[in-house]
Image 1 (spheres, one colour):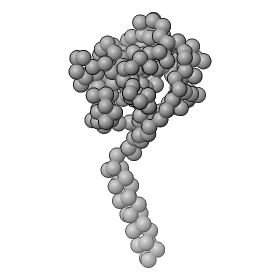
Image 2 (cartoon, rainbow, N blue to C red; image 1 turned 30 degrees about the vertical axis):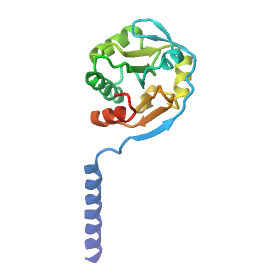
Image 3 (cartoon, rainbow, N blue to C red; image 1 turned 180 degrees about the vertical axis):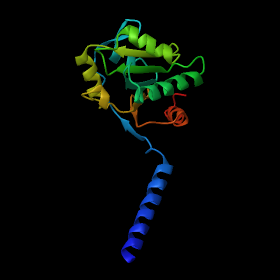
Image 4 (cartoon, rainbow, N blue to C red; image 1 turned 120 degrees about the vertical axis):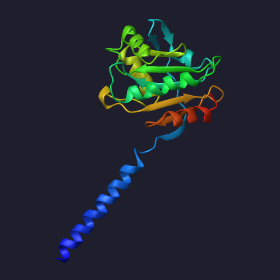
Length: 189
């Protein structure tokens, strides 16, 4: 009898703890300040134009960067919805450049990337880049974002402060309000 009572109480406390953890929601994102050396590679945007990544990133504009792929149905749509929401909140004269870099260059052609951006009603100032696998890998390694398989990718957003050249690394999924707050905190809004 005592054993049954103890087991019941233990089970009840485990259920309660599980309910409390579930009520807290997903773990929060993490934020860190980083320095990265951008590789001098040429990538191709959704219009088929070749762009030297290092030159574009060091142009003096604030940069918000993520790694996505056009056929993703999990993390990438959430990241892209954040970019779309950010663009909707920007004043008309904002000079923020949103940069999405494909982690699936074998399949993300300019046409696929154009269609992807169209789904999110992307405006001027949001570019989606692809390139040779070796160049994409160099970029992922440079940003400490390398993944050997696109299916094991993770949510990562980077914000570059043009004044300091430092990068704010946001690892994890954020709500729209958290993402906008981070952009404000970074001084780009």
